[in-house]
Length: 282
Image (cartoon, rainbow, N blue to C red; front, side):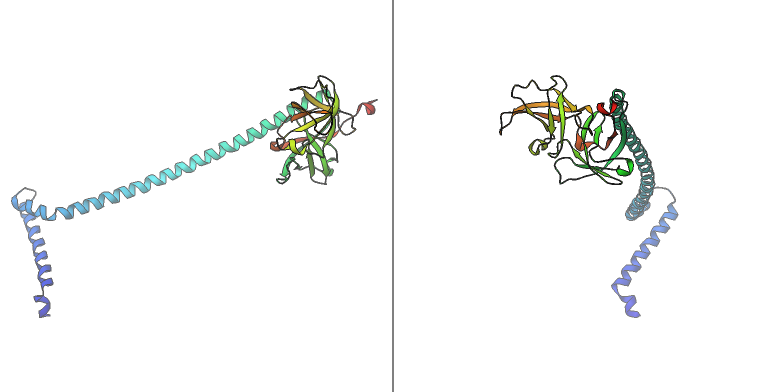
């Protein structure tokens, strides 16, 4: 114990305590007045005041920041909710706009052909490995859909039902090489047929082929179905002529056809489930 009181550490601690006590007495004696003693004491204790002040300011800022962040987070949540509502409204608007466009063109076609029976369908799948825009729709034989039915987007032909199942169907597009339909140029009345072509399909086109080398079909001509088949009515627009080329295998000519709509991007379509041919009408 005696060694403790004689140690340098104890003496240093005692000196600091004594200095603090002297400072307290001096402050009490001088009050709030400014004297040499108070200046000395203030100088000695200034670092402690500075540290305490900074700590206090820091705590205030932390508390303020926490409150501000909570308000910001609430505001962000509100804005995100509003954005979500607006996006839903925009999606509904786009869907309604698409359906209006779909039915507007189809209505014009139906006015000219009152015997047409339509069935709306949604695209529910696409074969990414198929380069010919084959797609699946959500209507099948239970909805009176059958193989060979024409598939339209508005008043444009996009394909035919390749295979109908009870609740869904596979659609073969007009750019598929397996597709073929009689067609004619509505201006020159030249008659031939439209089919898909593997090379042209890469650009989304099909061909109006087996034309005479002296054909009058030209750029911009509108090609429509000829209605020779019992499953395909007349005057359904297929597309417009983009180019005229000569076949390399014979002396005939063909026209490159751009479909009336972007088949790879449609998400709704109409199936022509019934119509009366001219022979049936007679």
